[in-house]
Amino acid sequence: MAKQDKSGQSLNQIKTSTNIVFNIVFLILAVMCVIPLLFVFSISITDEEAIRQNGYQLVPQALSNAAYEFLWNERLTILRAAFMSVLVTIVGTIISIALNTSMGYVVSRRNFKLKKLYTWLIFIPMVFNGGMLASYVVVSNILGLNNSIWALILPLACSLFSVTICRTFFRTTVPDSIIESAKIDGAGQFRIWSQIVLPISKPVMATIGMFAAFGYWNDWFQASLYIQDTKLQTLQSLLNQMQKNIEYIANNPYGGLSMQEYKLSMPTESVRMAIAIVIIVPIACTYPFFQKYFISGLTIGSVKE
Image 1 (cartoon, rainbow, N blue to C red):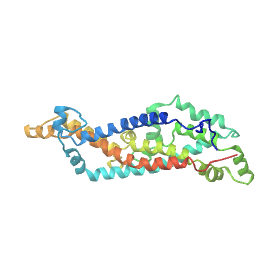
Image 2: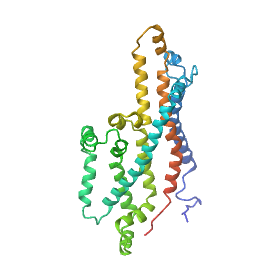
Image 3: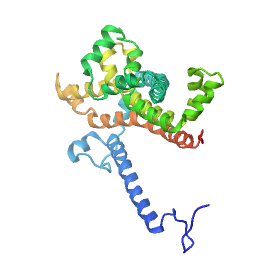
Image 4: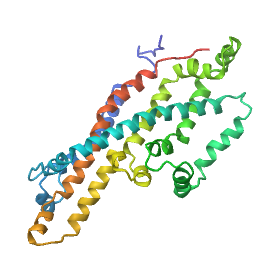
């Protein structure tokens, strides 16, 4: 039962005035987060000529769906790339959760003999690393993953930041007494990790899974480095390439007057914003479900000694 002061109010209860201030602050922050998305969508449905004359505006001066018509004409290619992005995101997130949680669990155990060595091997690259050239040589020349879906998954599978989160979570949440009790009952390390540790680790799994999913979905850099086969292009890589091609055509007119007029009428700015909307909307629609699972996971598997 919560303690009460002389006025009968709970000591940990937030005052009404403070609650109102917090609500106003969070409302302002929410609006600040939504306005950029509305701004991008507004530009994507604005006529290209109106953009050239009036610049970017929140309320369109002249409506046009030319940008989305342009993307609709490329729908088969976009759908194929979207399927590849979804596949990479799902597989990569599962692998990332398995790797990061297992590594975090190992370095969190105080009785692990090689804990210090593994800790240094994990955390030194957070400060010093070989850079992009070393990563490219390993992925391309040593592992030979060029034009392979694994070139889009493995380079991002292990995050040192996620390992740090898992290490801290396991050290503070999973008591050594539970591990020792499982060992006495004859459970091996893999069984302890899979049947005892993971079920009570849903909050941290949801957190690093969310980070991994967003990273895989938004990544286009790996595809630009290792993928030449158009069938393996992800959505972000394809749309980035489309944007570059549109800008190239618009900035380098050639041919007769009719061709030049056609290129000037191409929806360059609006297509750029429409591409951003196409990338943002799928992950934005899945975030509420991810957030619901994340919040519910906070109350699952509580441990009391």
